[in-house]
Structures are given as structure tokens and as C-alpha cells.
Image (tube, rainbow, N blue to C red; front, top):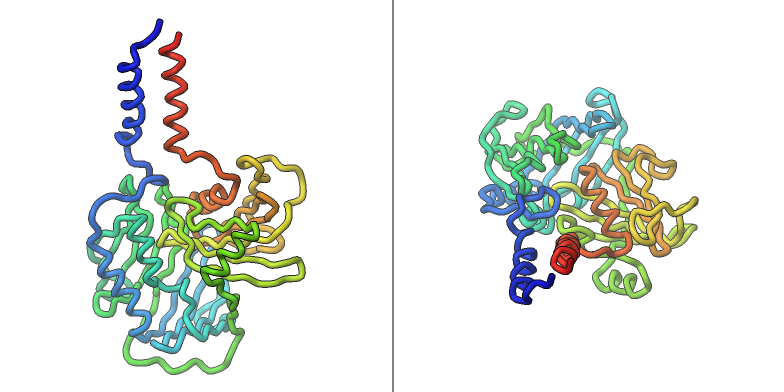
Length: 342
């Protein structure tokens, strides 16, 4: 039996339109709706450069534990931390940061990505660390909470920040348990260990040259991950590249270097070796990690981020595959063709 061409064309048109009527998918669809919390978040970003404070934070990482951190921030100068796992305030290891790293604050690029990925809305009011706060929610397309932030109403300082996975569990949280915002705190005494991030930040031109030399460096390995910054460093085993991707809430670091993982390739996609999860000798202590190789490069993704973001990074660096939308369309076309030609 053969089906008239007009009817077949209408059926194909309907097939293409059907995916748009499917319920929102938290991992694939940018959150719809207007934001009423972005203005307050921009004030929060500005507060880092304008408000001095000192206090004690508790950092909680799911699967790892908690960390107590003494914080002294002098606006315009930088931030001093003293921390060690399980130590009481004032007795941990000192780590000096001369200038607050951009990835530790909400800059314009991160805020732009946050607004593109989630719907940021006011969720109510509350008290945190004895101060009145406005609660902001970052919502996925299906309405689940991806992040929650308590913002001090008087200064705009974030008093607590949560990152949640798609099941609602808190993956990472930072909360002030003591805070003082009265005047400029004294400069901390002693130098301690000084944090020295990679200094060789890559320019757009240098990134373009790496791509021309065969390095796979996508601007967006997934619709909800955007390249924020990149660095390079020469090591004994060759050049290593550190790529920082973000959905606006979490930062996923992807380290790339030429080479192959040992063992047989079991495949996470065409030409990609098995993804290894958990800690490794080189990256011990990482809260979450993925390691794989593809196209002659070894990649490691790590960060205090939901597992789906790490998975998205791994998929985005593997061999390209057809977009999921067209994969569904072509699969449906195969079913339809079989039906109308029988």
C-alpha cells in the first residue's frame, strides 16, 4: 500500500512539530519566563568590590564533608582565607589571595550565562546569620531549583549560596555563620601560603591558534555550559590547557593535554575512551571528576558541580554526535517510513 505524497508530507510536518509540545526537560531547555531577581544579583556582584567584611564561613560539599573558613575581605584589595578541614575558626592553614579570582565572584559574564540558563526569581525573605535577607531561586525549565542564594538586604552580600542537582540534593553550599560588616577589617598578619593560579591566560587569538593546531576547545560543550576563561601551562609532559566552563552557578574546570589513557577504549561515544569517575592520584580530593580521552587528547573535568554538568562537559568534548532534536526526528522518520511503505 502506498500513501499519497500530500498525506506523507503532512505526517512529516507533524513529526517535526511534536517535540516542541513535549514537557520541559530540565537538562536540555533554557528556562522560560521573566527574571525578577537579576537586578539584585547584579548588586551582589558589585558588593564584592564595594563592601568590606570579615567572618566565618562553612563550606559543605556533598560526598566530601565540611570546611570551616575564616574570611577577611577588604574592598579593592583582596581576600584572605584561613582554612583546614574540621579545624575550629582561627586555627587552620592560611591561604592568602592577593586579588579575589574572577571565578570566585559573579562577574558580568557569569551573570549573563546565569540569565541565559535559568530563570532567576525572588522566592521570599528570611534571616541568615542574624541579618535580614532576600531569597533568590535559579529555576530550571521544569521548575526545579538549581540554585538558591540568600542576599543581605542592607549590603547585597551573599550570605548563603546553594547549588542543587536535578533531584533536589544540595551539591555545594557556602554559608556565613559569623559576619561583621562594620567598617574596614584590619589586614591579616602573616603571609601564609599564597594561592598562585595559572598566570598565562589565553587571549581569543591564542585560543584560535590552539584550535587551528588541532586542540578541541568548544565555546559551548553543552547548551548550558559556556567557556568563561582559559589558561595554558607548559609542563614536563607537554602543554596543558585549563578551560573554565560555567552555567552561571557552577564552574566546571576541564584540563586538556595531548595523550591517551591506558587500557582499552570502551567508548562513551565514537572514538572516546571510557569515562573514569571518582578521584585519581593526580587529582585526589576532587569532589567530582570525569576523565576520558578523545582525538589524541586526555581530558579531566572536575568541579563542585552537579553530576549532569560534568557529564555534559564530557559529552561535549567527545566525538561530535547529531543533536538530540534531530536524532529524535530522524528516528521518528524511520518509524513512519516503515509504516507507510508496508
